Length: 144
Image (cartoon, rainbow, N blue to C red; front, side, top):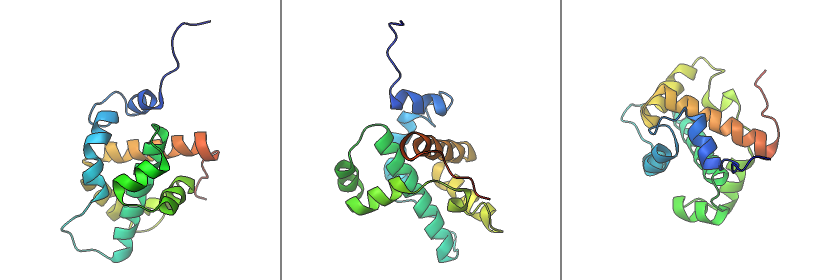
């Protein structure tokens, strides 16, 4: 039997982000306020804003729960209702959540990359949502 302790979810999150401090836990915690208030000067259709906002909120909630924060802490910190936190946590991530299955998917991806700082960070966020889903709400559902 190994004396090594099992990694914490925070350590797993860092590993999922390839050990890059800008993508891992330190970057996530540093960027939370910016991500939650993500805005852009680019004019676009309201549904695009909604996709960006919904994905960012889903990512923030799932990551906070995964690293051990409670629903009430998340709700208080981000001024979400407890029901919203539970809804974001329970919704399995699908490619359609970021419009990847539409002709406008590239627009949403570019906006997410601008809000997160890079496409690599968006990829890490998607991986984190899928990891949370797999461990907390069952295997992620693939978009047909």
